[in-house]
Amino acid sequence: MNNMKKIIFLLCLISSPLWAQQAFEKEIRNYEKQDSISMPAKGQILFIGSSSFRIWKTFATDLAGIAAINRGFGGSTMTDALYYFDRMVAKYQPKWVIMYEGDNDLSKGQSPEEIAAEYKLFSEKLVIF
Image (tube, rainbow, N blue to C red; front, side, top):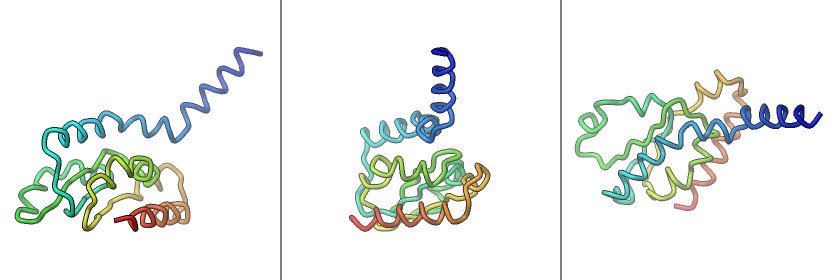
């Protein structure tokens, strides 16, 4: 019986949102390392979201002359954006936030209503700027 509890606990851990966010920790730390070398100025346009932003190879060229930061992290969801809000949004104190999230959320079974509620939470956190 004791082993059964361990197995159930392990399954709960694997399926928890925290486990999912850990998948992005390496990417987030890489951004933090870049920032420790050269912190972007506050008040820029922040692009945050899933891999569509992360794999945008011509970002710097396409937005030349525009003060913008790309902080896409592959395959993320609104839950992930909320989880990393302080580390990936608040610290930059952006003037604008351009976000791309939602398709990964839908593919993982979240309803449009659940995603909309998370977008609302995210936008409420932006009020602090």
